[in-house]
Amino acid sequence: AGAVLLLLVIIFGSRACSRAKSSSAASDGQNTQTGTENGRESAVSEKGESKDDGSEAQDETGGGQSGETSSLPAEPVSLTVSVVGDCTLGTDENFDYDTSLNAYYESYGPDYFFSNVKSIFSADDLTIANFEGTLTYSEEREEKQFAFKAPPEFASILSAGDIEAVNTANNHSHDYGDKSYTDTIETIEAAGIVSFGYDRTAVMDVNGIKVGLVGTYELADGMGCEDEMIANIKAVEEQGAQIVIVSFHWGLERENYPTENQVNLAHSAIDNGADLVLGHHPHVLEGIEVYNGKNIVYSLGNFCFGGNSNPSDKDTMIFQQTFTVENGELTADNVTNIIPCSVSSESGYNNYQPTPLEGDEAERVRGRIEEYSSGL
Image 1 (tube, helix red, strand yellow):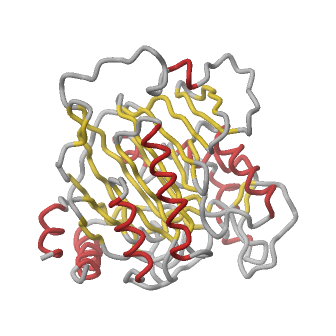
Image 2: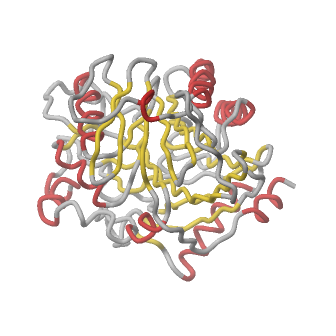
């Protein structure tokens, strides 16, 4: 029955909505400061410090906190969110540099990487990715098999590709020590992109709708991450979030079916207020479950992935969902769209240029997702 319901709610094809990406706010339980980049407002938590950029603090701009409240729009408001999986915009120092993502950046610049999907991301209202790696000059490499980094200017790949928000709660966010983590956040936020993850949540204003973003790392603690995840959902709700999206780094690599922890955490997230659950880390696609009317995308796979110059499984997807808020409440509509993609525009190797698939190849990937979803 779950599979039938899934097939009914997944609508394949392309949707396009006018772009309206505006202010955002990030919170880690401390102080929020705002800045402006490319006409959009972004917010970065900086442990109580304030940035002299002429911007206003959240309590001055509203966010449901001030004495004045704006009236809710009389007509329904919709927004389309696109989500993608692991984006590693860098390389491991032990990889062959000539075939690395970094070498492609030197040859083609930041516009190259998302050029085949930018029209999709520019037509939606919010694009979210998992950012797996570091943007830093730190030389303090962690003792691990793979550690990814790139120079800070590689953040321009995200802004050039029209990606507005990234999750940073994953097993490569500290590959070059704690400083590499803070360097990455500062660099991403300076590029006008919202980051969230661990105890750092974000609330973005998209088309006048407040979207709460929560990033949770399951690999270290298993179900032990549940309490923090629930607390973060409640935190963004208290900041006025009308839609809550929870992004999990979880599961087993190269497995196409979720673990018991994945299922339990996903259900708990929805039971506690999440409206969409996303997953990444397996590096391959997993199924989609509809639970209590909400979508769980267990693994989005890789996307723009500098972690492998020729992965054996290059299938991936862009998952889209259109939400509608009416009279301040999220409607029961479940309008979804899957765009099958490859991580590369070349079949024989990874050229780090995610590309939509067409014809039989697109149907093949859709068939895989339906197969993995059928038992959920």
